[in-house]
Image (cartoon, rainbow, N blue to C red; front, side, top):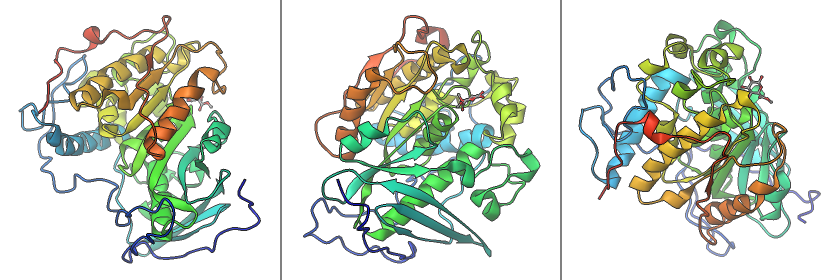
Length: 410
Ligand code: MCU
């Protein structure tokens, strides 16, 4: 493997400076996205309008805020921007874009992130584990310290960035006194919930890796994963940063990928009000929806659509009722319709028919599709597996949850 005793030279290039041209002699070097520029491509879209009224079933993800259904694949860019707005306003709180200044260093063992914005500054770091072989390597940002199969990730030639999101948004605080690197910038009484704050931190890690120019880690190839509360975080990170090529939430439960409308009635599952109250994971605005999910103008199937057409591999555990795997299956089934309409159905995979009921276990059923997803989306090799294996104990039933049909977009 790569000796961790010979770290690459740290760089501390401000990401606000122009990205240097890639060195064509570096293996694996590809043109870099301008720093931060690829986080969200819908900034120029008209997102005026409030969205649909109350509906106990899943809102039509193809219905624009102007009241017209989209009919072209290229319309998805601005539809994503609409969903982003609605999801921020009602579920997660606002995820701000790139701050005025982001600097940091990348070595084969560590990443530092320094942020300043409107006179406030904060910092955090993450550790790096490189795989064997010669870099620069693609990297998966792994939230937290459990549940993700990191040896399979490094075994595919992909680095692991171990990210402790609680440094960016701490658990255990009141909503009026939120703490961590995000809230040091945006204020302890920011209405943004932890999941969006954590995603902001992941985006800032990507800013620093981009600016470092590809000596250790590739600037254009990122995944994200995590289990349980960190699965919720991984899901939101992937939805809100288009530089993330592969999103892999594991057993994310309430506030993660499962449809919020379903969780409100799924037997034994963590309810939306419990997800709102347990920690400030969701935005403060969700207070008004925690007992009224029908009032949400979006649900997590549309958040899945924010990830489309990029890679998504949702892993769930049907044995623990609290995790809401039936609502998870319904989210995946409805979200898959968006992937299908965009002509990229194999880019979403879902597996919940797993045998071990232990929460956040490492599972053999996920290993091969994990390898295939890493190869396809982070290494440009092979093709997306497009596996869809729903447990018989927690099946979904899409027809129960929608009245809309799936358009064939041109
Ligand atoms: C599934 O994620 C959470 C769940 O939402 C919580 O209710 C529970 O307390 O903790 C889970 C978790 O993060 O476990 C590690």
